[in-house]
Image (cartoon, rainbow, N blue to C red; front, side):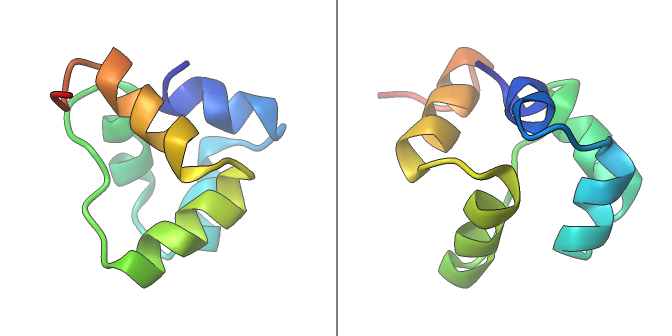
Length: 71
């Protein structure tokens, strides 16, 4: 599972995610194209999990599968 999979699971377009999170559409696309990972405050990650309707563990898994985080 990656960031795009999380988005598709909730049935939202990348543009909707960007608006809900208050980030540029290019930011969401870069997450999905594995160019970078979300960098946020703890409150930002809480909002990210709410928008994607996922757990912190699922978010970590998406980043590990992208090869961006080490165990």
